[in-house]
Length: 128
Ligand SMILES: [Zn+2]
Image 1 (tube, rainbow, N blue to C red):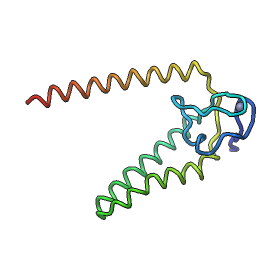
Image 2: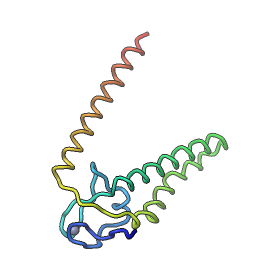
Image 3: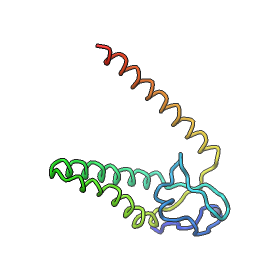
Image 4: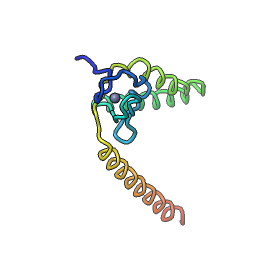
């Protein structure tokens, strides 16, 4: 399997590994050459999320177990190393602006519902 390193719209290889690593439906990478929007495949986004969760929880648990808060630095160091090492391995897919806008609207709605649920729970449970 060969990763497509260039922009899927114009094939320019000007998108950095950092932007490649973080590109998603809600925050796609923008090609500086043609302005096209790109994101990682769903499997790459899933792998990236699993690595982030592994880094977060392993550094938190190790920091608590060893009582050394410097271990919490594994998370940002791991994210930067992951972006540098694995970002260039992930292929980009083109995405249209309409799709990005629709995904952002859904994310905003879900965030509002979650905020309402947390607020309602806080009011109901906090009043006792
Ligand atoms: Zn492009």
